[in-house]
Image (tube, rainbow over all chains, first blue to last red; front, side, top):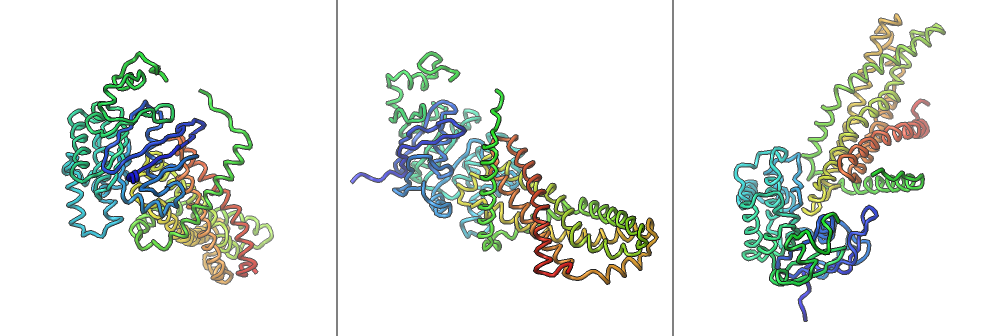
Length: 254
Length: 263
């Protein structure tokens, strides 16, 4: 019997502000893999991520996590499933009224009964993983965009989740830091067996971290394959996106 | 691009959706009261921040409300030769009506807008989504402590405003109406009953709860960035102020019929 996918989106439709964003999105994520979703800006990649974690409910279609339909669950039941998740938001989404340390410690303080010393140690450890040191007492308002994103990542991984969603993890970071984040994503998979879904425009990053790549266009997944398959494809739409060509089926202004 | 004008039916639909959402936020908040011990730090913080933040304006409003009420009723009573009775009217008016209504209207503007803007900004910057992903219910973490803080702070500041308004009235009675402070206070003591005070505090509690429910639900419904935060804030102040006046009449009737206030 085939293994149940960790996450299974079936024919998901979503209309926002009168625009039909997802038009029958179907996608599976398997345990232990890193799936990268690529596609042009405004095409619905973030909307897809939000459906995966129940932040948005589809107008039509189903989303299953470990075989359980989350589209009909109440918020309190959904909270139990979300315990397994970590998510890095595009701009970090740090709580601006809390310090960096309090932000990272938040999932621990809310859900674990750990001594305060242990909480502080874990916060320092996760911040060090994203190359941040002695920032625990700073307020998010004074951090740069890249630092906010790294703090957001430290918060996402602080409870060692089984499944992490990354929304543009390397956007706005310098190449050295982008590389460090890529290595972190790969290490999390190799050492902890974490499954990940990454939304990105950064093609070098996508090829570095992906086990499989899925391309989203016009509200649907048009191709799922390995990085090698994407590099070797003859499909003009995919080639244009992967190589960033101005000439091709898609207009730059679309 | 010019914005599409909303039709009256859109407006009505939006109003009903908003009212329904506010009721659902209110119900979820009441159901979340059981977790208050886990949120005591946040509750104490908001009671302190709301109370201290609103105290100076409350004092100013209470002083002038007491002075205006005393001056105008004093002039009216003077015409019929009863200016000395001003000490009967002003404390009753302050405790039953002017104290709770004026104070809570100011608090709707001051604290309601603050709550709506704070939660609305968190919403548009994905902080509330981040809470949900961390399995932290925004009703438990954000709404319930603010709601309870408003239910505590509004009656507290109203009681304070009642006291200051009555004292300010005594000052005006003495300086402008030739009514001695002793006569004013003696009249006040004679006429004022405990139920006059607690009926006003009951009103303040309800006004605080209404303002908090409206502000939190507007914040949670905020969309479209900075513009949406502005709209949520404006709506909070308008809706809360109207609800305060409407519920004031209903509560006045309730207090009269069921608690015997003014009977």
